[in-house]
Length: 235
Ligand code: 5RP
Picture 1 (tube, helix red, strand yellow):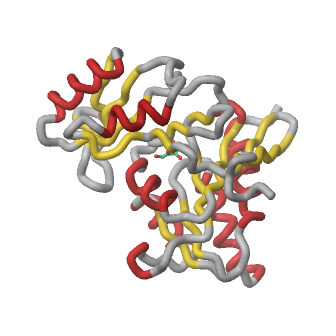
Picture 2 (tube, protein in one colour):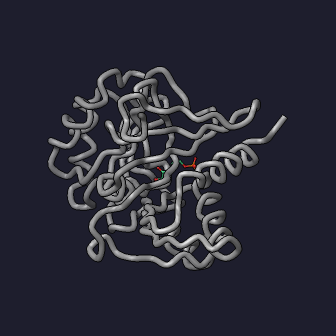
């Protein structure tokens, strides 16, 4: 039986088939898409693939540099051809929870700038209703206690600031992450996204609505590709 790390690697590598020479590629964050970044670096070095990348976190920026992917800023280019990224959950409508790695703000900006989004995941990420994975919400450090209280009232659940040891996790943007323990109750994620974004103090929420075009999923029976019939990669 394949272990989770092997599944992540399979999915991460399989997704590279969407990347062709000349493309501008958003590089996601996490333990699955790291295999995509490494594979793209290998294909550049060994197979003549020519791409430029935009990383979604400082960690991915470091990895991309290590494997030799040239990087550009979003401000230097007119959009991206594709972004490949991981997800914490995806539902039957291809709506996502992201932000388990605290990179949701940059991930969402990069996804928004991309002509297509490919998600790489192992089969534990597929759910019927979003929310078993605590919903990550990036909040300003200023008055974060008040923001957490407002989120808790809105979502009617426990919300806590994500910690790393003694201190809060700080994002690459100098903010904090509030995790909302909604349970699998997010039946209208588009509405939840808008409701959460209305709270002052919220910078961004890890609900990715109508962004994902395809999921490359690795399971015990191998890699499966699920195409969003309403997405930008369907015929
Ligand atoms: C980071 C993310 C990641 O893509 C998500 O947490 C999935 O990560 P992994 O592939 O390590 O399970 O949203 O903010």
